[in-house]
Image (cartoon, rainbow, N blue to C red; front, side, top):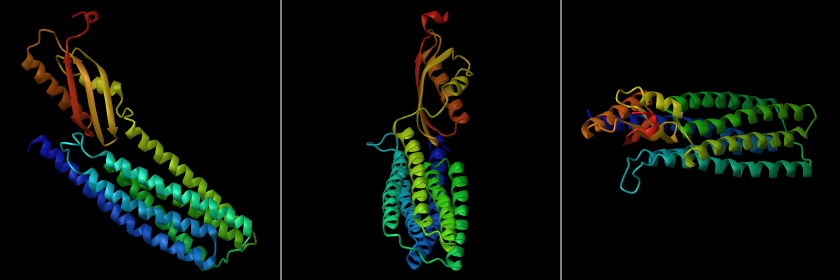
Length: 301
């Protein structure tokens, strides 16, 4: 089997696995969101309702992620010679947009509750429902983080961060409901503002991760790459080592120094050995572009 065919199979398997994870998480997120929204309308608790809509954006982001992943798995074509991998990063940015929308709505609802001073109706069953949804969220976060790291998927890791913020908001809501039950109604809008803080933090983390890919920030350590390259016989040195892409989809280009009198065929063969060694050491590398040149005069050869 050719290396390109083997690589294509590995990529297809990865995307199929990511899609399976997203569908499973989508079902759980929808169940949690509808339970919270129904409870929020039933009790009139702005914290519960805000948390419910926050959970609903988890489901919306799952749908966006599924679309992004289906596009990202397409092979390179004439207009996209580097492939479509950045569409997955764009899906992560779409998740960020959903979070920002929810952030604005939560802050607005909290200040409206401060203004009106309305008191929500709290009952033990409602608190029990929130505890169950919290348990589901913890399962989802653990599952998505594990699968995201295993498949090196930005979209799964971004979605897990989104859902992780939902875990903390649910904890805050449970404490707020208990506080309202014991006669402190202002804890309801205060919890909503705390939810806004968690959402804002998740926005910041996702923005940072996405910007690293879109701005072509270095992915692999230059020294780690140089160590592999210069372990190949006939390679006298290397420089201008550059890496870009995402954690699981890396492009590398570099210059290697070979003896000035090395035959072209031998130099070409050495460059292939360098490429093979790099891709064996770093399986996330998709392609390596190698420029061959003689060492500088000060090198001493």
